[in-house]
Structures are given as structure tokens and as C-alpha cells.
Length: 214
Image 1 (cartoon, rainbow, N blue to C red):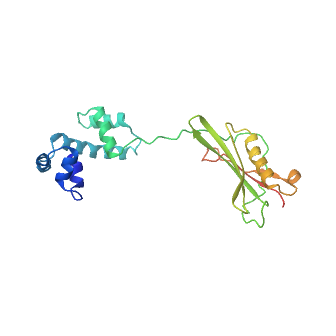
Image 2: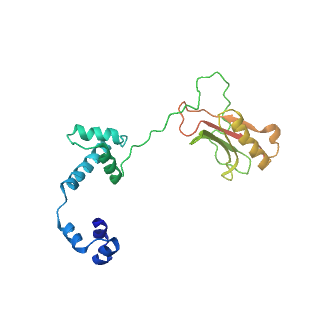
Image 3: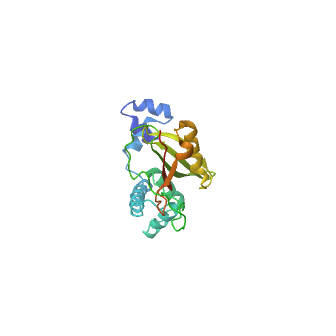
């Protein structure tokens, strides 16, 4: 409480702040003039040590490990105190993203040619569609999203979400694009070219292009 008064004394009179917080001005001046208590001094030392240990561990340590680090350094400190000081410092363990394999590169399935060949300059709408798929972690599990983008307008023209990575997912996104844009000759000439996929997911697990002449 006295810290709040000290922080706001440049804006409001000390007596007004003390009256609003229900403390005496003499008590504030007495506390403000005293040196920090041994407990407060130890808290300062522990907070500095916590910052060092957390940085050394690349912020992957939570309160149990940091507690053990302080004990190993000779500080007789309780777990609850470590938690309190970590909150004061804004320290917390970074959660590692769980690895989830979404592609299978070891297969004998046919691989379609890359019709786009990095030709991203498009002259008219519905000439080239690019598609991609990503995965999202939700409270109910993994959700997969497929989108179809018209490279000419840089606009998403189709999308779909599913609970699995079945082939029906990108096909549903493509079907939405066909219904919305109705490109000429799409019923017989639309192609899907599945490009090479990484063995380890990086936020994407399926890529492709679909071209329909306008």
C-alpha cells in the first residue's frame, strides 16, 4: 500500500492518498524512510537469481525446477515464495508445441506434376487457384483447414474444415470455390496439382494448385 502511495505522490498529495487508503501519513513517512526489511532484500536477491536461471534455461523451467535451482544455490526458500516472485517478475515456462505428424513422405502413391511452376503472375480471374492446408489445435482436438486462393485477386474463394486429413477436406474447399466462382469449363478441365510436402509439419501439410481456364 505504501508503494502505491510512493508511486502516486507526484500526482496527488500524500495526505489525500493516505486518507483514501485508510493509513496514516506518519506511518507512510516512517516506512518510506526505513531501509528495506531483510525479507524484502532477500526477495530482491531471489528475483534476480530467478531471472538468471530462467534465462539460462531459455524460459523452459517452471516453478518446480526454478525452486530446485534456488535450493541448489543455497537459498532456503519455499515453493510458494518462488511462485510469488515468479509472478512478480512475469516469469513462466514456455510450453513446447506438441509435434504432430501430418504428412507421410514414404508412400508409393503417384505424385502429380507441378503445373504452376512458380508462375505467380496471373492475367485474369480464375486462371490459377492456389490451395493450402494447415492445422489448428483447439480445446476439442485438432482441426484441419483447407483454403483455395485465386492468385489474380489474392482472395480466398473456397475453404473447408474437417477433424481429419482425409482427401475429402481439400476437395470440399475446391468444391466451394467451383460453386462460388463457376469458372468456364471447370467441370472437365479443372486440375489439382499436389506439390512436394515436407516430412515434418511447419503449419502446412498440403499444397496444391488448381487451374481452370476462364
